[in-house]
Image (cartoon, protein in one colour):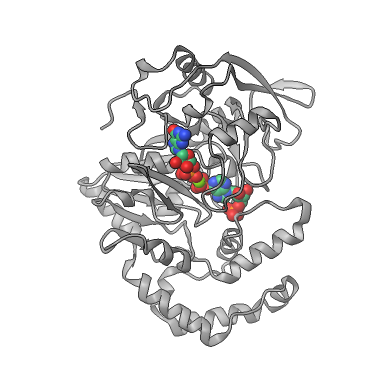
Length: 420
Ligand code: GDP
Ligand code: IMO
Ligand code: MG
């Protein structure tokens, strides 16, 4: 059996949590493969809101096993806090022994570097994501499996501080106090070690047996990918579908259906190029109607119209078989809706994404708006304008839109094809 995959095709916050939660009812295993607690996924069930950062959004299906892969960077402190929301996670949560650890000093480094960057700050979530991945890549990180031997891990962390002393001094980051660190590590071991295992082996067996369907849940979005996003204004992991292979130990042949998640308009939180950003009344109205404030940091999200050039690029790079279009109701009541169909770049009109998005000017088409789609759960019942908008997007991004979401609630979702 193959694993199906969900991936954000914009700058994150597309509504991945809602779709993973919804589809997870038909999956036995849900896995995160990159990112950390920079992610924020809000799920609404019967009016109750649940915010998830590290635990996969399959956790609300009591039958599903939730896996945190080796590609994720795990803050033990944040994970323990998040786990406290749920009863009896035994057998329902597995954490890779190869996942790298985020410690409080990573968060301090993250914030110190942002301060030093001044006006060129990335606008990170301040969760220590970049510094933890930097330690991993420079081969001085610490991994989940090391919690087994606290004495050894403690010594390794103290040595790490010794080796990097000049760097920490320059950033004004204090080394942890020895005894306090040891106590903390003991707490982490006690709370987390029972869940730590070789998740790659587990997934190989699950796929081989074929009894449980596997869903892979991307965090962030394609345009925040470290290689293919708007570098350097990106996160520090491979957010695209390909990241699922390295982040879980799967082979390309293990990946089945790829579902891209898109918002019916665009948002971005943090700094960096955003061609369709609207600084005027439309942007303001999208923020208000879409309640575009971050789940993780509470920051106001930057808003603008749908960017079909960026979305087509994202569908290609992820190999999306289909798309879920989220938050269509947020466009309710606009007289006209706009779609960016090409860019003006260095005096020419182009229909592709240049590696440097700075200085790109969006070129739009306008379509008629509609009154309301709020809560509609059947395609035929959508107003004509909304259907025309959806069909235009499909044509522009060259990918079928098979799921449409018309409110935060699970039940307000249109499925245009039978799902296995
Ligand atoms: P994620 O990071 O991709 O999981 O997305 P977030 O949870 O950060 O942001 C999406 C927000 O939109 C959440 O607050 C959801 O409850 C909400 N949401 C999801 N789908 C819809 C929808 O169709 N309509 C509206 N109005 N809100 C939605
Ligand atoms: P979900 O999974 C939106 C953004 C930050 C910043 C950049 C780098 O909820 O879609 P980082 O802390 O990762 O080093 O910050 O990435 N960012 C997100 N934006 N949704 C997210 O996750 C994000 N995770 C990180 O705002 O611009
Ligand atoms: Mg989010």
